[in-house]
Image (cartoon, rainbow, N blue to C red; front, side, top):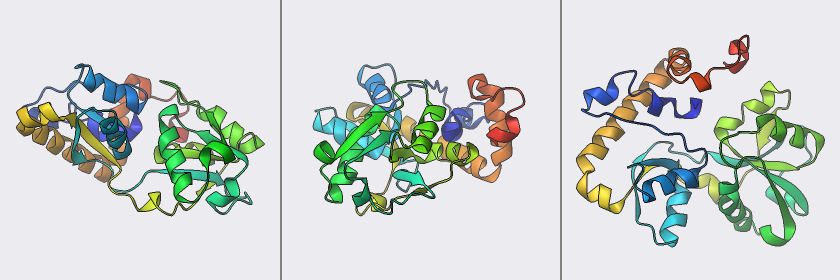
Length: 241
């Protein structure tokens, strides 16, 4: 939940009400579940990386990005700081971890852009399937060499140094330049019929983003108060910060 604090705090902070909105937020676990929730009519908006819009449009689903949430690429391959790996080329013939099963097409495309045949030269291990982040398992796999690298969402990077395993990014020729990254998406029909409502939602989230950037400690405390499942175990608050 902490990565989406600007979204989940728009109700407690009153920003949704200021825009005349009553917003319900459902945590879906992985990006495809969020998009499929909109496809199935359970929600109006999904918050996912821009790449998923391309994937679902290729499948014939009319999705539309209407507001940028993360302007720069926030997925990358990481290795331990002391690793001898310095480029994606060094991953040939190794096993690579995936933060989530939904990330496979993006990770494959990133490797292919650097001339690596992801199907023949890389083996993938997946550590998140729906709700569980499996952070400890990912850290242990990278520490022990079970995986050489891991394709990771930036909000998960902090888990590794906290667990005693600092990591660094591997440069990616094409993907590092992509912008925007995460966006708010809806389907084309909702965009046509409710564009004003979507604009007000985006404005409320922009206010939430500014609040979280300006008052990060207060944002975390509010998140723990209003989203109990995001609260760390007693005694772990300092480690969580």
